Image 1 (cartoon, rainbow, N blue to C red):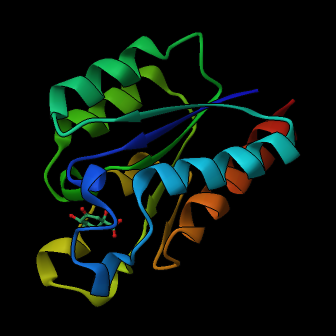
Image 2: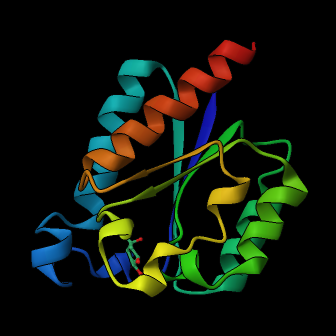
Length: 146
Ligand code: DQA
C-alpha cells in the first residue's frame, strides 16, 4: 500500500513557526515519526511539501494510479483552495485531512475547509499525532476495502 503525505505552505517552517500553536517539532521530525509508524503498518510512504498551490494540485493529479491514499495537511490552502478540492475530486484517491492545531477553536476564517467535503474525515488538534491518526485512518480504510 502506497500512501502520499502532503504538507502545505509554511509547514517547512515547523519548529520555528509560532511554537505556542504548532510546537517545536520540525517537519523532518514529523516525517521520521510517520515513517516509523508506516513501517510498523507495512505501508510505503512518500512525502511532499510545497508552498505552491499549483504544485500540490499537480502532485495530486500525478498520483493517480500510483498512490492508494493521501494524508494531507493543506495548511492555509485549507481555507481558500477550490483547486486542491477539485484535484482530490478528479483523482478520487481516498484522502484524510489533518491539522496540527484544532482549526475549530481558532479564528473564524480557519473554521471553513474546502477540503473536508471531499475527504473521508478530518483529524484536527492533536499536534504531530494528528498525522499518525491520519495515517492509521487511511490505512484502515484501504484495508477494509480490499
Ligand atoms: C494548520 C492550520 C491552518 O489554519 C494554518 O494555516 C496552517 C496549519 C494546522 O496544521 O493546524 O498552516 O493546517
